[in-house]
Length: 111
Length: 116
Image (cartoon, rainbow over all chains, first blue to last red; front, side, top):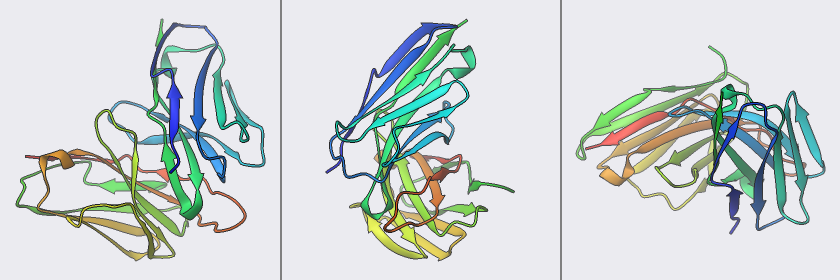
């Protein structure tokens, strides 16, 4: 059974810092990995999707990498802003279109 | 409307009530999903529908009954729920790709369910 772990569970940083969120998964037989953002009480917003054949994806200040063989992904956020405060979720897609989520990293960026 | 919509956004029900959650996607996808997000637990997949046929049922109790009448609509019928079923219920959709790779899933805003 696939298990996804996110470290740290919570992170508080001052505005302007560059930061890295970590995700690990136990079964490397995945189709893709998605990073999502969730604001309190809201649904999920897809940030980046990395197919299993890719190594990284970039969108604005966000960069996500994937090392499928070691079961790891990182989300890099450059020049963090208070508006980046949210919970960030990592999820891997396996057989049967089944998406398995990590527990999330709760990020607080202080002005 | 665009994207994935869910109604109602909030629902309070007693344990003896019967209610339904509705999801609609306007993205031309052919796969739809129900997820449950409880406090302090990771998001859990409940049901997967590909081409209107249920292909996954992740050991969900029978008091949750999904229905997918067409590729754009998905329902979750609720009856005789327990207080521990209180959670955020999220619907998602995607293209279904069985062999070549994984498609991106797009999520609705969720229905916040409280069972008294």
